[in-house]
Image 1 (cartoon, rainbow, N blue to C red):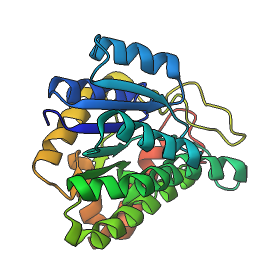
Image 2: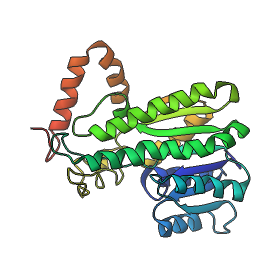
Image 3: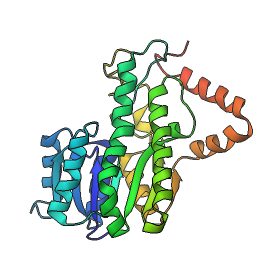
Length: 268
């Protein structure tokens, strides 16, 4: 990873921030993207006080011109792009019957279209470097989760998109990887949108018992080095992907019970 130029979206917190720190330790050159420029600049200063190997670019991935600017700034600064980590994401927690369609659209705009926009403008440079394209996903991209219709849809869409990109670029040497992180301790559940689009503010899960962002980052880098196509981090997720093909109804029932047991679950 030394001297590799890495773009990370959603780099101001959680998995994105942990990835930034992990890549910095590997000696990579970083381009950090998120909506909060102040946070990004603080992180960039922490990782690279000299300001030579890390830049911060204010980016709302749901806006196409922001994503184009992100890639343009990368090439302007470092003249190349080796790894794009599509990490920026937002979740939701509400039943479809209750949720406003604007919430569904917002989740898709960030999770799916953000990946599309960044990837679209990065592709020529990744072809040139024979680089790596990463989608930070979830088990929700393999099996629908109740109360997370838009989140699951966005991750399923991301999977189909990146798998298509992989096949299109087989002869160009681009490595495309999907990383399905297990439940990770981050702000994603606190910021998850409720039926009216407001953040729920409280997490329904014991964050202290969840996977750390640092562990996810280590897995991501290790999987890139090994040229993995798909990495499902948790045994629970691996079993679910297997069992949904063998005993789909039982898998649905187990998932329903698990999510219905959450505090203040929207499932009746």
